[in-house]
Image 1 (cartoon, rainbow, N blue to C red):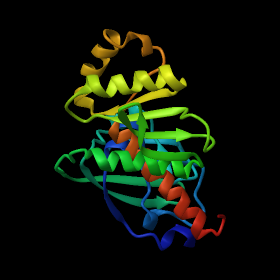
Image 2 (tube, rainbow, N blue to C red):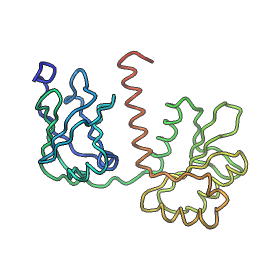
Image 3 (cartoon, rainbow, N blue to C red):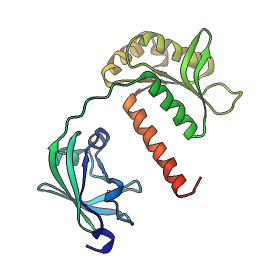
Length: 231
């Protein structure tokens, strides 16, 4: 291997849920060469994938079907090793089971608030709407009405959450976002199809894990910008 790669040691990591779901492998910092190639070969067991795209965030995009074919599943511990400047070898070690993380309402609310700030929006928590309060809203200008309204509902009273979101849409034409868990998506969809059909065409129902993933990515981008003195 060239000197660019010879200093890279074998690195062990656990395949994350996002990697398994979206079909990529994220290279840990210690496994990244100084100059990332744009295309590489990835060898996983007996499967060899050529021309795998590498993006600027050091993600190797195998694709969902190839992730399934190579049996790279969430929680699987693997070893990464560069066998040449253009070839990465992935070796299975052991399956790792990690306890499922319980979503926390306030933590998700705070992430939505910080995402808004990171995107340059005017984000506000516990925003009053008549006698109720919305978890988070985003505004474009201070004196303007919210153009996005978020409600976090990981259990409990979905009817109340959807009532607030519908009211925000009626009052301000705010785009309503309901953040929930995979377990409760169907319950929310049934209410939207029935009692809240007026906002069926505008409401967006998000899995809280997608919110967390976006939050982590935006935070990492901001950290990199700070390291590079681009802020």
